[in-house]
Amino acid sequence: MTLPRCENPVTPERAAQIKATQIRERYTAERERRVRPDGSAQYRPTEAEFGYFAEDPYTERAEREPVRDVVDVAVVGGGFGGILAGARLRQQDIGSVRIVEKGGDFGGTWYWNRYPGIHCDIDAAVYLPLLEETGYIPRWKYAPGEEIRQHAVRIAEKFDLYENALFSTAVTSLTWDDADQRWLVTTDRGDEFRATYVITATGTLTEPKLPGIPGIESFAGHTFHTSRWDYGYTGGTAEGGMTGLAGRKVGIVGTGATGIQAVPMLAEDAEHLYVFQRTPSTVGVRGQRPLTAADLGADRPGWATERRENFLRLVSGEAVPGVDEDLVDDAWTESAALLEKLLPSFRRDGAGQGNEEFEAAYEALDHATMERIRARVTEIVEDPATASALQPWYRYACKRPTFSDRYLPAFNRDNVTLVDTADSHGIERMTERGVVVDGVEYEVDALVFATGFSVGVSGITSGRLPVTGRDGLQLLHAWAQEGPRSLHGFASSGFPNLLKMGSLHNASSVNFSHILDEQAVHAAALVVAAETRGALVEPSREAEDAWARRIAEGAPRHAWFHAECTPGYYNAEGAGRPDVPTGYPGSAVAFHEELRAWRETSIDEALTVPRT
Image 1 (tube, helix red, strand yellow):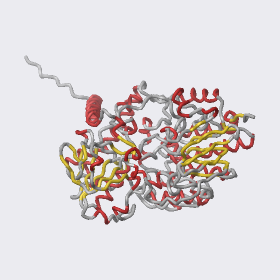
Image 2 (cartoon, helix red, strand yellow):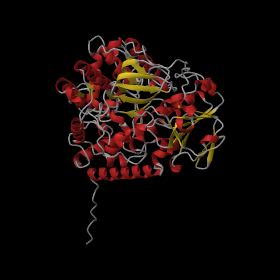
Image 3 (tube, helix red, strand yellow):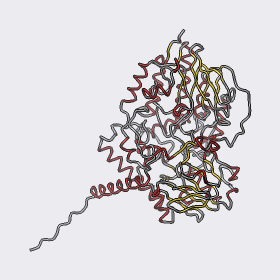
Image 4 (tube, helix red, strand yellow):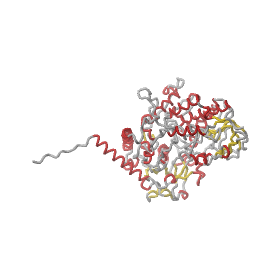
């Protein structure tokens, strides 16, 4: 007798394992399509061979006499970091403060970036600092770039930061004079002035980059970078109306956070738009809406601080379920559990490669989120081939998420063509008339580079702003030998009264304006402590060593994760992000609490008695 064959049904658990394996294999295949052997070298600085890409199209440079004087504090950089440093110094009644900014006005990235459709992707009442101090209520949940730039100006006016400011001016060197106990500051305008303290707030997204496309110099059409938008050519404003593009074919290179916002605007005004994409972004729901004081509860003192701290707790993994209400309620707070691999300063609670249970749960949540994002593409984009090319196949934290309700629908227009460059690992070459991908030439009248910035590169780290401390010690030379050294990321031995703002040895968050404000408060407190005690802000080597050990404790081990990611600026174009302790090993919330406690009890660790 032949017994019936017994089938072994696939259990739900086994089915989930099979699907997870298939997704991982697809992620790997898509990554390999995009990895380039030249890595980050595929980009070039705009100033290297194309100086006109770095020029200021917004403010005419006014000639002036070189400055020769003395100030209490010189702040290098007029973005939110520098503005907040100036404001917090004013609140502490520090005397003369001079901000030096290479742009024509305050605003930093919001001064330079004025491309069509520009908005911040962080809730405006969380992102915009000093709202209560200036009495301002944001008009939209996600503020347009011009509203943000005007708020920067508002803060500068409120705290008299235009006084002594030097615009259209770049600092070229900082040299400590031990005899004078001051810094000599020189600029590209011939200035040579002295400052008792120097605060560097030069940002980490300030140096525009261009793709090193063969033949880029031969293109006869019009080109510009999104951070130097040429409205003289396009016409219109950041809100649209680019009548200069009528009858013209336009190409845009780059589909990150900038391209996501610019594409819908270009699609409306160009005769035809070619979107050159290497890797699609994750595009979540934006949900833009107006804001009112009633929405924000702005009748209560402390409302802005409460909202900002609430957001930070949620996206830092510090929120207590059932206790911390989500005051912002957007895609960032909804996806906060997936930011663990994105932010070094995230409370991990034992997470890491060695915790298999955590990693399995994290991956399952990641896959479910990405499945929803890919499904949204197919629901919106009508052409199946275009929809397929727009689907992101990588882990959520591999790239900074983007949010838009207008980007995907733009590809349903007859005048928009998506050109996927993954199989050719990017644009093949450029000709006098256009762009070549996979042997096909796309003729364009203008090409817009939405290719972003050299991440983490500032004047100091690039060497363009040389810093010379005690006994002729060069900062970069010292760091090249030992690696970066600091106390809390602000002050370093051998470089008295030099305070550095930024992400190095500090906390991180998707809302960096909050981080910068906490840094500004801390920097001002250090200046006040030094003035009160007649000391210099300069930690001992022992204090630096202790902080180095502190940031090494529990440092995230995410190199394996980023090595598996699709190439982008988060992982040095596929090279990976090494497990080097460069940031605070806990959450930003914990770091800020630690700094506050340290200022109360141990601030003398950062001070030394001046040499006589």
